[in-house]
Image (cartoon, rainbow, N blue to C red; front, side, top):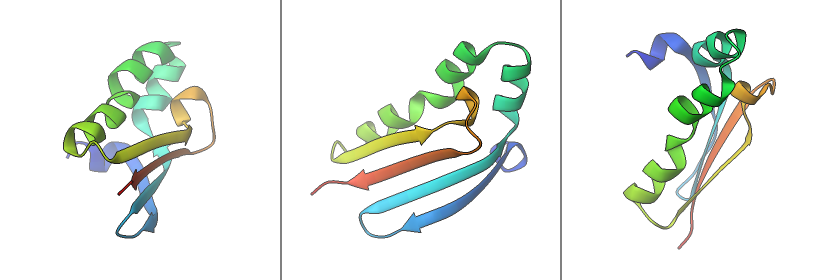
Length: 83
C-alpha cells in the first residue's frame, strides 16, 4: 500500500540478472495527465527508480523505454545487473 491500489503491474521477465515490469494502469499518470501536470508527475513519481537502483547496487542499469506518464500505452521498467 498505497501502490497496490494505484498501479496494475505484471512481471514480464525475472532472472538472476534482469527484472522487467510492465504497468498497464497508473492512477498517478491518469490524474496528472488530466491536470496537464506531466512534468510534475515525471519528477515526483517516475524519476526516482534509477537513482534508487544505483543506490542499492551501482552495477544495476535502469531503463524506462515506455512510460504511461509520457502518453505511452504501457510503462516498462527494466533493471539489469551488470557483473
